[in-house]
Amino acid sequence: MSVLDVVALQLAAEPGNVAGNVERLLDAVRAHGRGSDLVVTPELVTTGYDLDMFDERGAELAEPLDGPTVSAVAKAAAQLGTTIVLGILERDGEAVYDTAAVVLPDGSVYPFRKTHLYPAEVPRFSAGQGLLTVDTPAARIGPLICFEHAFPELATTLALAGTQTLVIPSAVPIGYEYLLTLRTRARAQDNQMFAVACNLTGGGFTGHSLIVDPAGNVLASAGPEETALRARLDLDLITRERNQEPALSMRQADLYRPEAVDRLGVVTAGDK
Image 1: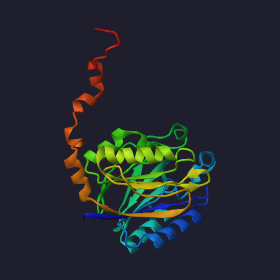
Image 2: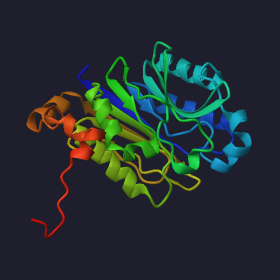
Image 3: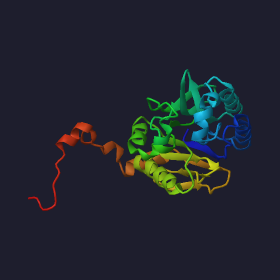
Image 4: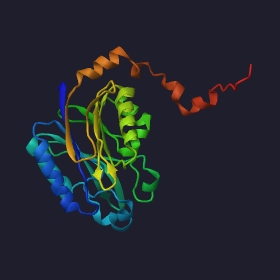
């Protein structure tokens, strides 16, 4: 497909109220997801984001990928014929992950586990060990979660793997919306791909989700209230932007390797 119809569901989530959060999420998916190719939800939208709560109840609130929440979301994805990116607290054995589960209309589920944990998250979650790209029926997408869009290398790695749309479930707090906007636009323009940042709102979270094109232009943006952002993404724009400024194809990867630091010439002002 050359056009991707995407919806970002900017929602609040009550900490610990999984049943209520999932019910509200599914209502929003049914209300806004019809006719879409891709629906993106915020980080940990099923449990809410509360680190103290995770200390006490993380193991209880986390679910396996074959649990009731993912099953309900998969049913909705099949009914609507859309791909849903679900922010969920995942349990796998004894490990608990901050996960973005990519749920396809055919019922397939592909988990991306947050690899770069924010320092306060390190004692609470296990870190994922790999990146992910998924060929959905409409486009190839690549997820990152919140803090991870501070790392340009991650987005570039996904772009080099053919990702057309970067999806970023987030829980950015009030006062840091400038980082959400700046980094989302930068990662899109750096790599000339689309980016969809879907952020929690309410309970100290800023909202301000946005959808950005490969030139870094904002196609749709939210304020702090609950809302559903929608945009149609012309995927051919990726090729046009990359032809105009072929930054990815002109990378000199040998200069970026760790061992290249040893060969770096450092000149101090005043030296001859």
